[in-house]
Image (tube, rainbow, N blue to C red; front, side):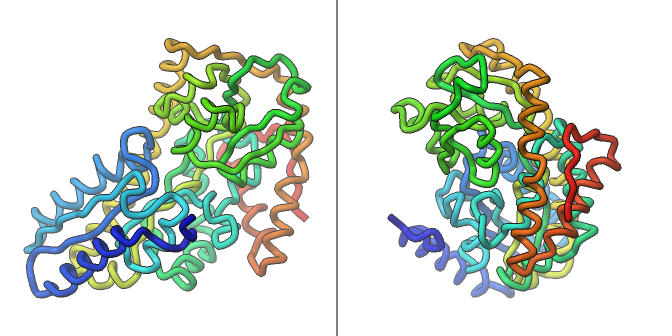
Length: 361
């Protein structure tokens, strides 16, 4: 098994050749930038919008507004770096620009997972991402950590739409889930403790086969991906729980040196288009959520809604979870109390009513 921070030799060689080309031709009017993500464009909204909006828009503006042209070497679906390798790939310059879920960096980016630590939050993906942006703007520690420790600058945030639960078998009560193995990204797995579930750390690309072969019996997953990855085939029972959309779950970053080595006018365009990408990708995520639910309803999936009293009980069981995570972050030398309290307050100020009274000590 490959170490998390290492890349395949072929990918490493390709990246090194690209580095020589990029910086060996620094006097040329043609620029080359490597961009990628561990998830594939198509099924994954954030990667799709990198491919379909960010890349062509940067190319168009650079050609129209500067004396340069910019070319992108695109590597989605883990062709350059897997989901748990992308932060390191950007840090090491294997990728100039990378996007990844902070959930796959539970130690390095522990506090960037703040939205995962307060479940049952905003159900709307656009609202969730807008709140996360306010948190990043209000607490520069988050961006500074990326720059100071991992050599990269935050370009944009995205996230995931509303989390629900899909299973291979029907269930009608919480007791039916006791001892059932459920896959998830990592920081959201504690959400399942109330149900007595056996949590399994996993990634989207592994989910279909794992459920098909019985490695686990369900996935904690949002509708856009549940449909696009065809999870409804091995696990057709999809229960709407509403754990919340997770703004900031995905971040797009650029290697510090790569960004600074761009001509100033090109660098400005990259930053401006990144800000536009954040808005476009958030809207695309909410559209994908609606389309995913509609498609699941018209497919072979069986959709049910968790009774509100059960959902409330589930939420109450996690009332202290955000505070636990805040104190854990504090113990790691991170501003856990400040950021968790700030996130919870920003959600409420945005008009969303938390079903649980989260208190941060």
